[in-house]
Image (cartoon, rainbow, N blue to C red; front, side, top):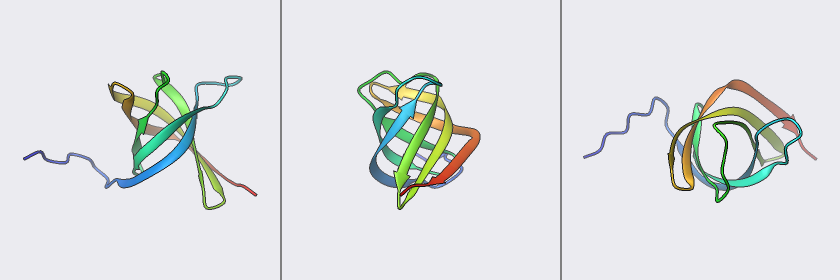
Length: 91
């Protein structure tokens, strides 16, 4: 039986988010399939760079995380949040 080696529990979600690779680049859509305080699992048909900003909106708040890719399998990837996080109220 496989053992879950994650440090923090993940919450399963199915939400559209945006990734952006740098200043001046256009935000692109991806899907967040699970999320924890330290990282997330994403799916995208587009190539996602090794480092990027992930924006996830919901409940009137936009949360942005700086991310680093830790694994890839086709269009699915796991990312680690690398420290910088911001929250903004929307609407």
